Length: 217
Image 1: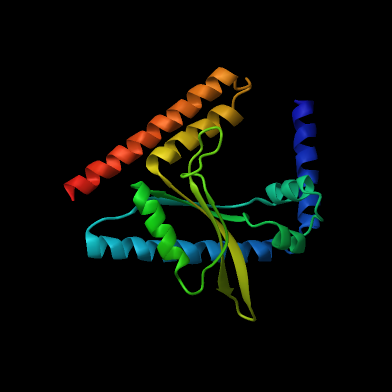
Image 2 (image 1 turned 135 degrees about the vertical axis):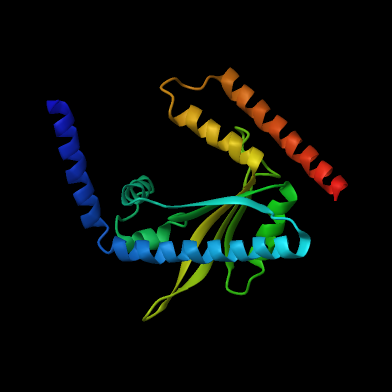
């Protein structure tokens, strides 16, 4: 019990140090939260328009997250960058993140294209892990975009990481993450091979489901 109390005290002191190092982080969180809401609204409008025009919702669901102060500090330290709110703004583009789970592969690219064509959206970086999957089998389309957030006294352009994937890709990524990071046992070469094979099989199913949908339409 004493060890547990010591660990809790250490954690509290560490959190206090993080809050001190990230002075002004609450204000920064507000700005990044606003950026998430702006992008989610854009995506919802696109989804609703498709429903009204084509009787099809390309977006199955969305999830969003804001990096915790602890995660921000850890990432800055790993990169040997100064630990401060200003440094986080300069050096990190994934403080705000949105995961967009689409019904079909074509929906992923359609939504990405329409989002990037909007006048106030600037593309910073694009990584296509659907056409070029990661070695472990991971598939997703990653966009880092920048959008304006209108505040009382200024306008701030804020980066948001948007990950677009199908339900099959999301299913694989979620379970792979649990197995890889929440297991005490290392993932053997044989298990890594099996995970890649599962990703490839799900990718084939995605293609087949797309073809079936188009045939029915």
